[in-house]
Length: 355
Image 1 (cartoon, one colour):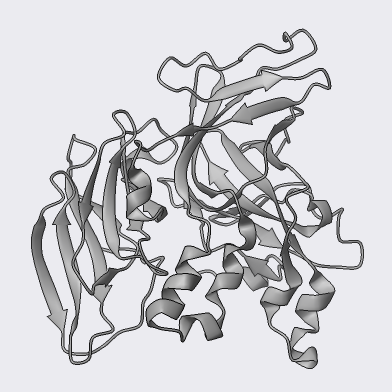
Image 2: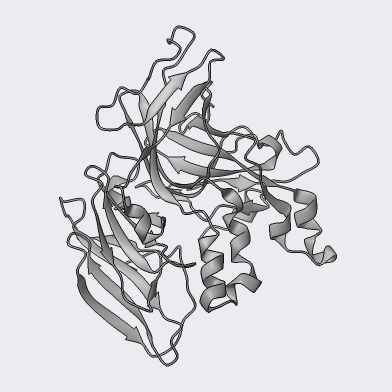
């Protein structure tokens, strides 16, 4: 157990740390001070904790993704008004009142060398989108391939106000109908871009993805995503809380990921997606709301999807027990469930430990 506050003074950290096989942990922390924008820019190594800080442009929220050699920060147009957040309790407001979606700004990708802390000089950008969860990132053909769950409208956070969650029936349906859905998308960031790189040409050399990356006259590389789902996928209501075979394929080219389908305000199905064929499998049960899936591999397995999916399933139905669902990760068929004689709250971001 490591107490971060003894080594690094941060006001907050993300809920999505990354891990190396040797136990090294990477995370992004925020430090808010008088000078704001120009924060820590050098990497620090503290025991088994490696924290890399990049400048915070006007306190825009960022997401950390990791490939074998790079950390990617996504600067999206979700702005934090620190004064409103700090004084929210005194003013009788919520923290959410200090968070705003500003789609007049584009989304930017910042690539950092994981080993040296150097920020690569390229400028990669996209039309504005919001993302809260990474699927995976890997390197291929001089590019970083980045897979994310994205939505085109970042106002969805406001939907989860308490007064909305207390609604039921038609009122709750109206709330759900008003929010943007998140869907899996792939971006390609070509790393070897310089003054000699041609303008207006698609710089993506990878034959297995339709994502585009085009340099403009200003030197910026504009990235257009490829959908990682088939047509008609919208019927499941969107996908969030993605998980992969992390121990075997994080930072590497992979084929499968698992997530929660959002046909409701909270996840109401589990989904397995094949990123090569874009086919998907689904588990769903009326009145059941599964948590974020957790992949547990079979020891010494050679197949990527050889393992089980664990998910805690809850229900608002009175006197109905919560249960731990176990699915075969390959076939997505139920192997069993362990019921708990009690009701539990809906949860996410769980982990499996063998200890």
